[in-house]
Image 1 (cartoon, rainbow, N blue to C red):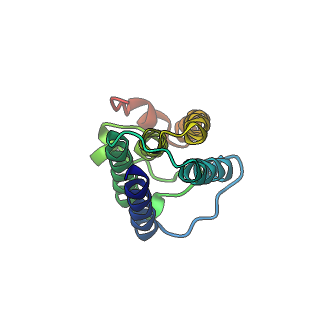
Image 2: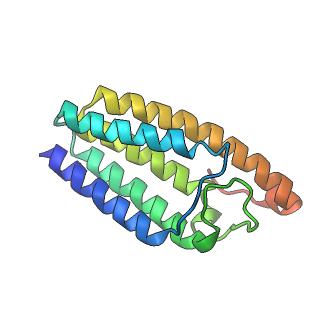
Image 3: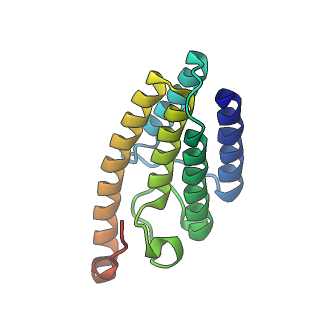
Length: 158
């Protein structure tokens, strides 16, 4: 039961994210490719493993997808894989969270591991979380260089 529901929620997320974002060619050093591969391996591996996990994992996927889509919609054309955005957005969801898109992606990966009760997906989720940490550190440094005092003054909760 949770396998089918997980697949449906993940497909809905992918469609919503594709509709909300523009075409972006990932820049070097952004970890977009390894993150995408880990996500794909985790999703496919979990489905093949075919575990029937906890339903609350599906809710975690939905929360993560919502965070990502809200972040993408709010940033509009500024949403891209490059780390050095010309725009510093500090309102809306960015008032509360510094990297809602990354938090959302980690929640999606973790929720999938729970929903599918999959070790393959759990390992992929750990890889995605590690890549998100590296990426957000790089993004923080790039934004600090690009926006100086405005970036220093911005202090969301997370």
